[in-house]
Amino acid sequence: MKINWNLEAYFPVGMPWQQDSKLILFGYVASSVWSLSCPVQIYWSYPDLFDSGKLIPEAMMPDFIQLADNAFLGFGALILAMIFLTIANYRYHFKGSKSVYLMRRLPQKYEMLKRCLSVPAAVILLALATAFLLLMTYYWIYCAVTPKQCLAPGQWQKLMGGIFL
Image 1 (tube, rainbow, N blue to C red):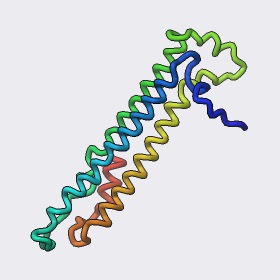
Image 2 (tube, one colour; image 1 turned 180 degrees about the vertical axis):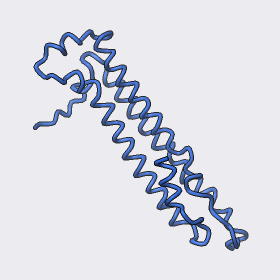
Image 3 (spheres, rainbow, N blue to C red; image 1 turned 45 degrees about the vertical axis):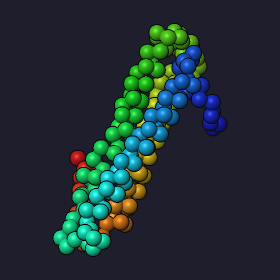
Image 4 (cartoon, rainbow, N blue to C red; image 1 turned 90 degrees about the vertical axis):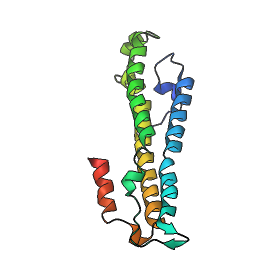
């Protein structure tokens, strides 16, 4: 099976795919940059553990889930935009290029489905994978820089509960 790396084959016929791909790339980069608010929050919270360079007894770092509160909203917005792009791709076959008639005559039964879903699905999977990797990286940074006595117990459980609940 040969993979077609031409992006035009994954957008509706006649659709200005270059503009859409630039917007998708911008959204992905903007989401990744926005997620940097999490390590910035860690950086800002760290000095509160010290007074004149000495660790304050009983000082506690805020929970990681609290510091990462809104850091991944950009990826959520990107995923939501991909759902709307899927709808727009489908509608374009009927309204924009009227290529729905071409799609029905093609021997490839699922060509229209491929052109509507493949790019949004790939972007959603990439966004989820990137968000997860960034979350784990930021959690590792949080655990690595925070003195052990300043970590509240159960950080991993709170993180997992925040993700899956």
